[in-house]
Image (cartoon, rainbow, N blue to C red):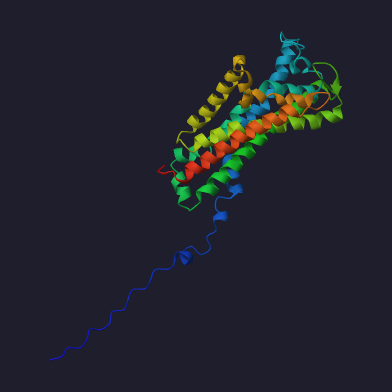
Length: 298
């Protein structure tokens, strides 16, 4: 007795292709710069840093009002000796007293807090699951952090220039070693000085950013970057190191003062910029390479 062949069972529909499921997905449209900038701008630490930097020039004005005209220091004339000569002099003085440490802190804070804070909030894995490509995540966050750092470095001398002009008047930029820069030349020279300070801080920025990809503790990344910057300053003070100090970014941190000379000197700033950019490129590459394969669980 013959039996009829079994009826053909229809095969289940094949799952949609990955390209079809991801229709409309564009990696370049995830985590846009303006969205990240708005998030960082609304954070309390951004407001506090801006307020402190804006308040520093007024604190110095009060200090000069109480203490009187600055006197020549033991180690020869400095920009502080001419702080009250004009608004331009006061802006240069604010740069002189803050470039070594005060301006390091906001750069380390903005760059060191950017990735580690997401891990600390346990939101980093959700950003990557959005999905935001890891390279784009780092690129956007680094760009925003550097932008905020640049604003912080410009804010201090800008407020100092306005406050100093109101307090001491507008005039030539008197040089502590003698001579003066005309008021029309002072602003471009100060702009060159601020630009160099930003370039010199790229080492701290890249170091903080690299540490931020290695830890879930923002304070660890920020503190580590500031601490290593201080170590560099200490090593630069060890004259026994001789020419070895030339490879330390701290050795060139005050080369911006060459912009405030009767004849603009570029050699020191060019050497310092090359050292700073070289370190920054290496540290940034390490951050991207390590984070690309990192097991993100926070």
